[in-house]
Image (spheres, helix red, strand yellow):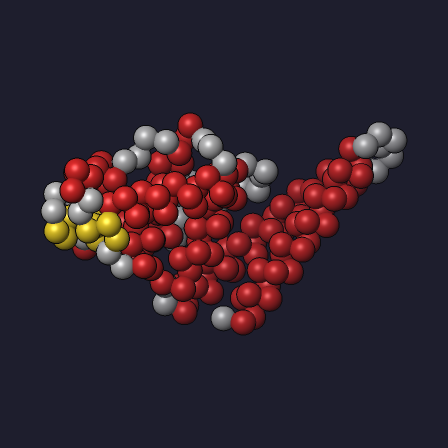
Amino acid sequence: MYRDNSLMPKEAVRLVVLGTLMQDGPLRYAALAGSVRHFLDRIVGPSLDLMGTSLEMLRYEGLIEALDGSGMEDNALLGPTEAGRAEFETLVRANVRAPSADGINKLIIALKLRFLHLLDPDSQKEQIDNLVSLCETELARLGDLRRVNSADSGHFAAWLDRDIAQAEDRLSWFQDLLNRL
């Protein structure tokens, strides 16, 4: 994790793998690999930052285990270990980095929302409250930037207005979700 307790790309991949197994139950090696690859590709597109974390590495680290067979070569049924469940809890509760258009940030938020229901209700509320705060910080930052550049005669002010509208929409959505929990 980064110094601010937010996830690095490698940890985001771990969260996808562990969360998928926690949510869907044990899966065959090929099905798990395909599911993880599909989700990551659709959220952030092809990314060198997200390549390289293999299911075999997670097995070696004791986070997932073969419930039958031995691994990729025989398409073993894979499930999380107790250490994997504990790692999932740590990863799903990690901070989201300061707002940005970063694809990794989008991935982390998507993962939190995908696996949020696996947490107890108080933890769910805490995570959504953190996302509300993140949106409020983003709006304050963008609003300040907009005020400083209010006389901009180029396209920057219009672009900022679009970003502010999107941030307001995200904030409203997260507040609504928090109220529903």
